[in-house]
Amino acid sequence: MVGYDRLISIQYPNDLPTVPPSPLAYEYMALKLTSADLMAWYHFPPTMEVRPYVYLGVGGAAYLRQGREDKYIPNGTYKVDSSVHVPLGFGFEIPTSQHVSFAIDFGARIMDDYTDHWKGHSTLDETTRSRTC
Image 1: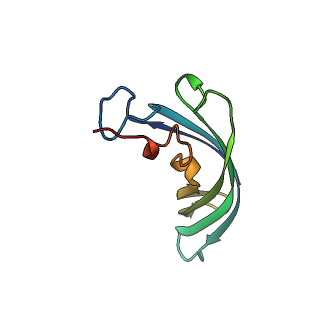
Image 2: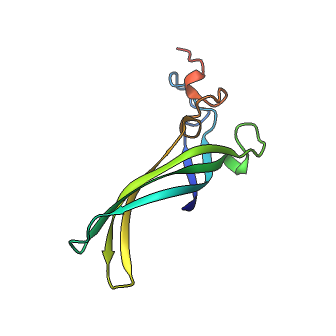
Image 3: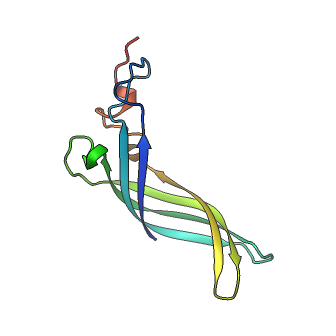
């Protein structure tokens, strides 16, 4: 399965005089992520009109981060990073005919710490910034 996601987050503004926590380095961030995964689906036996299923996959993702005005983060240069990508979830399929069905899906994506928490990126990692009281 191949996918594309654009995740946007708004963080504490840079100019807030909050101590602690210290203001984050960027107020706005966007993550553009393209993923490719090998998926396994399990459909439970169709004993009723609503047919539940679960899925799990493993693959990789390529992503880049942008701030306001499409400036690349952290240093303004275009750099594509990669990550492990593990999609998982469950859903319900509701067939309306032999050829058409509707599905409701609930899922999550697990990635490494570099994508989720900026671990190892000392200029962006909130946990490595010095705090003053």
